[in-house]
Length: 308
Image (cartoon, rainbow, N blue to C red; front, side, top):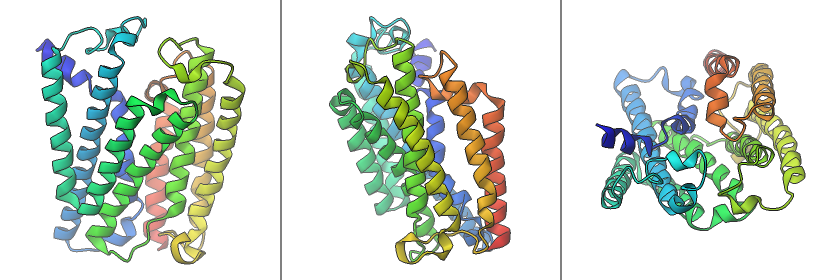
């Protein structure tokens, strides 16, 4: 039982919350699928859930790869030394077998959805593998690559909706950009907190005095998130690739304060906490952030459904 528990822990259960991004396009397209026949809705929902599982498995594979590469360094870290791989709680041969099974399962689930989704999943796994091997050692490039991984989740989820409903539906560039800037905001806070909390023993990309640049990155990406989300809310009036599935009366702008409140609270809690380098801990510990997130999901989907 302990072995199974340790294998499951290599998936970093709390960090799997980030894969919920795959579902966001489905939620924000409720007006497009709600009136469809029940069998088509079930098919769409099934594909979305399969896409979610494929990204969860893909993330799990990357976590194992990353932990295996860092195992010798993590052994000297006060917290990371407890990881199952760093603490040798899982035999190396079994680690290889488990990672191969997880990778094959991720790709298999991705193939069930569509070839275009599988391509996005392939880019994600390839980029994150490269991150684990090389990119994480390069300052700023490391968080940019992770942010791209978040954007790929949203784009993959959007492709599932498009392929299941109507291939002429436009994938919103503003929603993708908003995801990227918000990710850079969170990741900049994470790196800044690692510096200020002196948790740098295993991250060479943070050597030197980079705190000022990271703090400026936090503020810049916070502002860019607000701007890109605002453009998303009004983008129905744009043309070509810049348009999106949003109400023509601009009522979705009513949700902008929720985005601002959530991000400001996350920033405040992270910078004033010893857990600032663990975004998932900040989120799980804050009932306010969780309430804001679900309020945004419910209000946004209702506005999109009612006003379209």
